[in-house]
Length: 405
Image 1 (tube, rainbow, N blue to C red):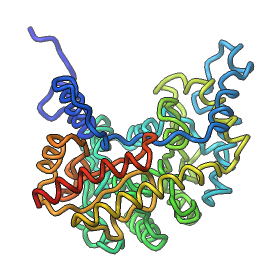
Image 2: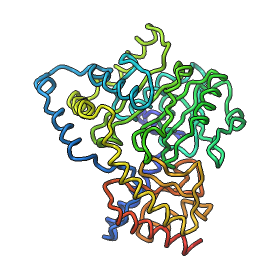
Image 3: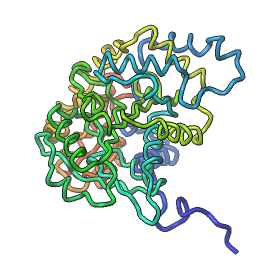
């Protein structure tokens, strides 16, 4: 008799491999087998923040209040950190959320997975969520675990407007929400305020939840005032789950994120939400929360990101110029104004084939198919790469494009 394994991992419709990590593993294998050192433009890892910020984080890690305690942390997060996050959201992005609406999660991924958990399937039916493409493909797996199908659709015009008629065609009686991501991974683009409002109005008219992934909200090259948060519109705040992350502004290895709940949730429902959160684990490591809290105490609006974004802006501008010289194009929907990504439209219909040729040439990127929009590749220029490193790697990409275009 064959021992049972869940269809989550063993069935024909089980979890798909993480497309980004698949290319990372291929790059790793090439380096092991050939001894070559590839230029890595494939993983979305940020630059480190300034030394004073890391020092503040270290101070928080050694806070005796947590180091000398054997208590479990609160499942919803340390109260002082929740309050600090609420203040930062209000002062920086105009999101009026009191502490009771803030949950601290195991990374931004933990926030997203919690939302999918509470939007999971009804008995005998499989829910779906409309997802904006291009978008982070791993969302499909997160949703699948809770019996939700993530339906990725290109919802933006080349000029960055909302294609309401396309959204309408992809909504049915089993659609429970819409997943949005701005600033966007992979494009680095930012939705204009009028587009944000159009999406929110569409969701309200069809009584859909909005799952807003704003992990890159602090990584805007021209200043955070360019970001329009989905949770910043009071008239729509009763339907928005806002997910954020400290991974992009401190370090990915601290695994710390936050979720802002919608308004107008009853006490009974909040109680059930808390139980669902508690069932996910016994809370995020208190020392890591203390470290993030100390950073927010020393810089309540995280203004240090201006320094980090200056480096991103320089690296993105250099890479963009080189890529445009090789025939790549950028429009409103993929104009990199935030994050450490570029997502150029390339003169190839098959982005996987281009990614393979780039691997052969010694540089690793991620094909557009991983983000549900072919004809593009994602290029990551974070990870503490120098401007010179970025220029060298992007020139390699441009050389291969010119050779095969």
